[in-house]
Image 1 (cartoon, helix red, strand yellow):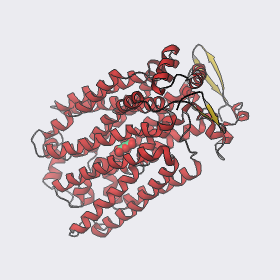
Image 2 (cartoon, rainbow, N blue to C red; image 1 turned 135 degrees about the vertical axis):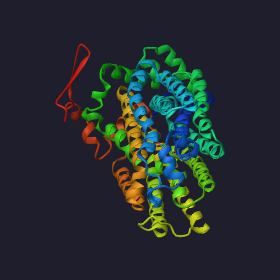
Image 3 (spheres, protein in one colour; image 1 turned 90 degrees about the vertical axis):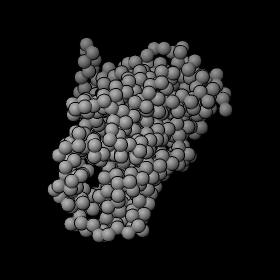
Image 4 (cartoon, rainbow, N blue to C red; image 1 turned 180 degrees about the vertical axis):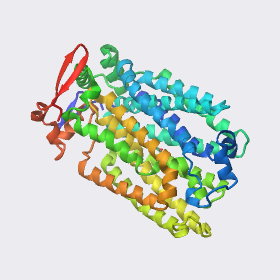
Length: 521
Ligand code: BGC
C-alpha cells in the first residue's frame, strides 16, 4: 500500500500499512492492561487465603474457616469489610482517571502510562510488605491510582497509533493483556494458596506486571495526535511517516492538525462534552462501561474461587476451575482480535450478548436445581460440576470476544480529539465505579437474591443487546478523525449532530480561562 489518500464513496482512506514498528509499539503499549488484569485476578484468591484472613480480617477468618455463623451456602462469604478491600481500589482508580485526563492532554499519553506503572509498582511493594491494615489499604489505593492512569491513557494511545484498518485488533491487545494479567494472577494464587506467606507473594507479585509496563513505556514514542496537540508538528509528521510506513502522510497529517486546531479552541473539555453535538459520544462512553459491568463478568473474575466453593467444589478444584476460566478468557480474546476489523464491532456485541444470555439462564437453572432457595446443597455429581464449569466457560468466551474488548475499544475510537481525553476519563470513571459496585455488592446480592442473581444480570444483557441493535453505528474501518460522520448517517443520532443543530449548541464564552455554557439543551 502507499501513495496518496483515496476517497471511497464519502469515506477517506489514508495510505499506510501495518509496520513492524507500529505493531511492536502497540504490543508494548497494550501491556498497560497487565496491571489491571493482575489486580482483578489476584484479589479474589488472596481474600480466600486463610493466613491472609487470619492476619487482617480475623472475624471473617473465624466465620469462614471455623464455620461460625450461617451455614447457608449463599451467605457464607457475605462480609462488607472484606469486599471493601477488593473494591476500594476502583474508587481510587476513578479519582486518578480524572487527573490523568489533564496529564494525558497536556503532557502526552506516554507520561500518563509511565505514572500509571510507577504508582502501581509502589502500591505492589507496600502491599507485599504490609504488616497492618493501614499499609494494606494504602497500598491498594496506590494500585488504584496506577490503574486509573493506565486505563485512561493506554487505550487512547493504541487507538491513535494504529492504522485505522487495524485499530480494532491493535486496541484489543489491551484487553488481551488484561486477560493475561488475570490468568497469571490466578495461576500464581494456585501455587501460593497453601504457603504461610503466600498472600505476600501474590500481592507483591504485582510488581512484575508494573515493571514490564514501565520498561515498555520508557521506550515508547508519543502519538502523532498528542505531539500535534502539544505544538510539535515536525516531530509528529516524522512519527506518522515512521508508523504508517509511507512517505505521503500529508492528508492524515493535515486532518490531525485540523482536529488539533478545533481542540485548542476548547478550554474546558468536560463542559464541552455536555454539548448537544457530543450527545451520542457521551451516551456511549457512559453506557458501554456501565453495561460492560452489568454483564456480571466480574462476579466470575473476582469471585470464581468463592463461587466454586459455594457450589461445593473443594479448595483445589475451585482454584483449578478458576485457572481454566482465566485460560478461556485469554484464548477467546484472540477471536475478537481476529474478527473485530473483519466482521465489525456490532456483530460481536450482538453475538456475545446472546451467548452470555443463554449461559446465564442455564447457570440459574443449575444452581436453582441443586441449592433451591434455602442454599443447602444436594450432593454434587461430577457430571453436574463439569456442566457448570463448561457453561461458565462458554459465558466467559462470549464476554471475552464482545463486551470485554469492545468496552475499551469503542469509547476510545468514537471521541473527537477535542473531547477525547475527557471522554475517556468518563469511560474509566463509569467502568471503575460500577466495578466497585459489583465487587462491593456481589456477596450481599448472592446472599439475598440467591440464584436470581444470574437472572438479574441476564436481564441487563438482554437490554444492552437491544440497545446495541438499535443505537450503535458500526465503527470498523473508519479513520479516527473521521468518526464524527457516523452519527450523521444514523436514524436516531443524526438529530443531535446535523449542522443546523450545531447552532443550537451552547454558546461558549471564554473569559479569563473560565468557560460559561449557556442554553444547554
Ligand atoms: C473489564 C474488567 C473485566 C475484564 C475481564 C475488562 O474489559 O473492564 O472489568 O474484569 O475485562 O477480562
